[in-house]
Each structure stands twice: as C-alpha cells, then as structure tokens.
Length: 225
Image (cartoon, rainbow, N blue to C red; front, side, top):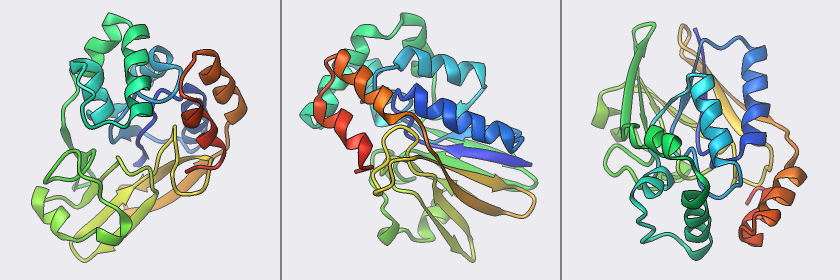
C-alpha cells in the first residue's frame, strides 16, 4: 500500500488541497498526519473539514492542544496571536474534533508497525532535528517506521532498526523551500519518497493580512523559513 505522510498543515487549506491532489494522483490508500492541524494560517475550519472529508489519521500537535486548552504559554508572540485568533473563529464542532485526537498513534500495514508522534517518543513537544536523530527513538516505541513532525524540516533517516521520517510541513515549511512538503511510503518495500507541491502562496498571504494575522507569519511563507 502507498501511504501519504504529512505534518504541520497549520490551517493552510490552500497548501493542503495541493498536497491532497498530488496524493490522489498517486492513488494512496491512507493519509497520516503527525500533528498541528491548526495555527498560523487563516483557514482553520476549512482545513479541519478537509481532514474529516479525506479521513486523514492525525495526532495532536502542540498548536492543536493550545486550541483546545487556550494555554499559549511558551509560544512566541506571533504564534500566540494566531492561536488566539484561531480560537475565536473555529467552530465548536471542529474544536471538539481536535480535542478527540491522541498524542500518539500506531498502525500496522504489511507487517510494519508505524508510530506517529509530533515531537519525540520521549516528549511530545521536543524538537527532533535531522542532526540529532538516533535509532533510540525507534526502540522507545518498538516500531519499524517512526513519523515525526514539529520542526517543519523534511528528512528521512534509515537505520538497521528501521526508518525515521519527518515529511516536513504542508502549511509553513522551514527548510528553505516554500512548496508544501509531504512524503509517500510504500509499505510493501518500506521505501519512502520525499515530495513537494507548489501552491498559491500569494493567496494565503493576502488572506492572512486580511484577517489581521501577523505580517511576519504571512511573509515567511514566500521563503520557506
């Protein structure tokens, strides 16, 4: 089976639609999302509805948790402002959908155990960057494939014990490439391809500014940082 792997959509429905179109063309059988459906960008309800419609299997990210709890302690001022705006416009039904997500998810496909966490198995809010990835993370949750999010940096690391992948961010990449990031896993072979999808960044910027979201968050989309 081909599985689409995404993370950190962050209320960017325009980018998500581009990725879903690319995944549909590849005939993926399932889509996994490693947390942070909302935050930063201007389309929270539309994004959550796309998750529901496409039956995307998601876990809870730190922005998702803040939407539910209202606790923005530890977030920078731009992220906190965007979260407060998001809480003011997201429907109660969609907040309830987010509240129902787990911190960790495990599935088995083709005898391979796939585990998703937003940060790391040791701390759901920990940033795991490419340079500090180790096979210990696989051992911590006893899996063949570990899917991470949170850093918005696309990478994959192969070890004798298995594979660790961060598909990068759909909605706010931070690896210098502004195109929406995602990955495709072939569960039969265990191989994974890292991919990108172009989308209408200028429309998202325009809509962010119209919503009076922080200009810094809008303009960073152009540079992928």
